[in-house]
Length: 236
Image (cartoon, rainbow, N blue to C red; front, side, top):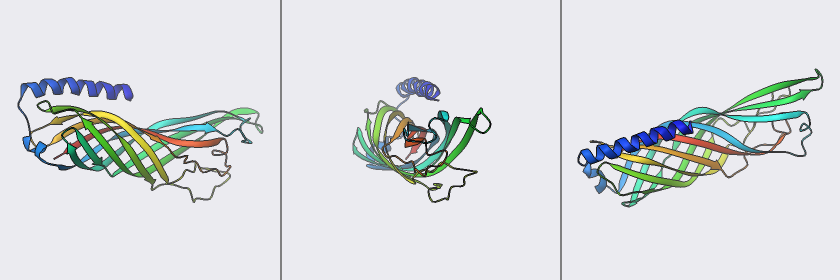
């Protein structure tokens, strides 16, 4: 995913530079506005950074834990304030659908064999990022930028209050999360709006695991979110 996104960004970068030099400035009124609105849509891959619980009663029987990132998508509304030509403050409330796959390989004493157990964790987040965007000066119809800031997220699909069942355990995480974001992208001015391509990463600050000593949670002492975002932005 990261190699594909990098290839797309570089391709658009060189095409955009050539296009901007060949044609005149598009949408010149855009630069006269201090506040801009728009929307964003894209896809994500989400994962967890985790640490093991050394005091777990299951740690000896579990030989491997893997948490595999799964694809998701996101959409949001953009509000951008141009503090300066090259400095912009952005608030982008968004809805994101994320998924992770937990796979546990363990020694089953009853059958005397190695077995696997999986749990698919699906999350629907309300995300509220506040980001600072540092952009180069506009070169005809092109600019590059770096972006970073903080994000609060609330998981609408959290099962933190669901009672565990011994025969069918689930992964339980907190509904509230805080993360920091960093990334970059490119802006392209078209005749009637500004189009952007953006790649960024979110790293969770908070341990969102709920330790209830179930099969899935007992071996883990910490879960922190990690999400890659590839987004297309449209602003007027």
